[in-house]
Image (tube, rainbow, N blue to C red; front, top):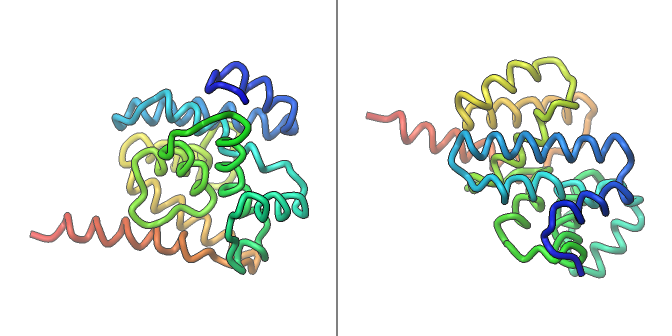
Length: 196
């Protein structure tokens, strides 16, 4: 069992992730910390969640399935058909068991970073967005999204969900209902706020 010591976790991740994924994780950690300070979340929790969010990402798919089963994670048909969606919930359980992280807010942010969900907490929003805009990311519109992230978190999340949905549709992939729910929830809340 490890403590929540960031240096120990960094050392472990350096061994278990490929170089690109490790750099990405460090980028998400830093971006999450900055966004947390900007929006009043706990920067240490954001750093830790950002660092560990992809801890299960480089595990081969068949092993991810077996590990999910062993942890008692119930995967839906979309997660089974879109393997990239498994590493969020699996990563939360690995973080709990390997890194001894007990904070449910951190674990939920890891769990939801691939799909989002309705009624996300501030930390969950920050980790989802940090994963999308960290410095290693390079796609059309990312600079605008980075700027938006520091002006209006909700607008940036909607733009990130829109971009993700477009990407999945372009490759004729399956959209997870939680992503749609997350986007709709923010829009519905914004609509209520804007009514006189």
